[in-house]
Image 1 (cartoon, rainbow, N blue to C red):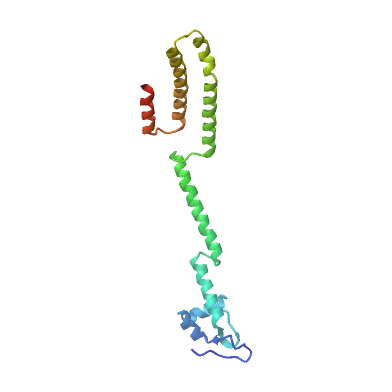
Image 2 (cartoon, rainbow, N blue to C red; image 1 turned 90 degrees about the horizontal axis):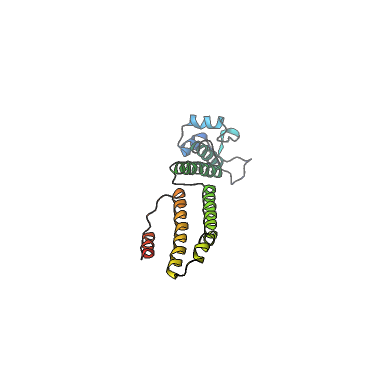
Length: 182
C-alpha cells in the first residue's frame, strides 16, 4: 500500500486508490463507490481518497447504523438513559399497583391524620379521667384508670395504623405486651 502523492496536497495527507481503501475497510470496490456516492467516503481529485477521512467517514457510518441513526455517542448515552428511565417508571407503576410502593403524598396524609388522632386523644385524657379521679382515694385505682385510658388511646392508634400499614410481625411488640400485662 503505497500512498499516492499529489503536488497539491500537504505531505501529512496520504491518499490512496479506491482499491486500497476497499481492502483496508474490508469492502468491495463497488460498495466503496456506493459509499462515495452516499457521501460517507469523501473523494479527492483524480480518484484518490484520503485515508483518515475515509476511515473516519466509514466509522461514523457504522456508528450511525449500530445506534439506530444516532451518530453521536452522547446522544446514544441520552437514549440509553431515556430507555432506562422508562423501564424504572414501568417497574414503579407495577410495584404501586401491587401496593409494594405507596405514593409519598398518601403517606404524608396518613401520618398527618394519625398524628392528629394521637394529639386529640392524648389531649382529652385529662378531661375523661379528672372527674372519676376526683372521687378516688386509692392510688392503685387511680393508676388503673389512667393506665386504661392510655391503653385505649394506644389501642385506637393501633387500629388506625392497621388501616394504613400491612400487618408486621414484630417480636418487640409481643414482648412489650407481656411486660405491661404483669
